[in-house]
Length: 103
Ligand SMILES: [Zn+2]
Image (cartoon, rainbow, N blue to C red):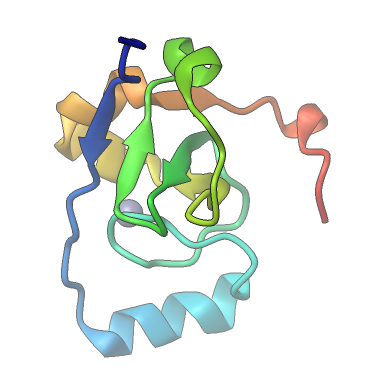
């Protein structure tokens, strides 16, 4: 039997809509934190989000993961949310701003 890739359920944090809107106005909606939904100027960490969202794949288990329709690719996570949810840390990949290949 094939080994299953490690995954973690991404916590969802509710923030007031007024704050979400204010952040979007300031930073646009290009990068939004997968935990709280707040816009950020440029992501420092990303998670490989799968299963249509809400689940992150461990970076060391990329080789075990079979990409399917639920593969959301790498999405940004805010540094604050990462600090507040230490369980997510092994699932976050540090982004070198120079390496951002999309956009
Ligand atoms: Zn966040």
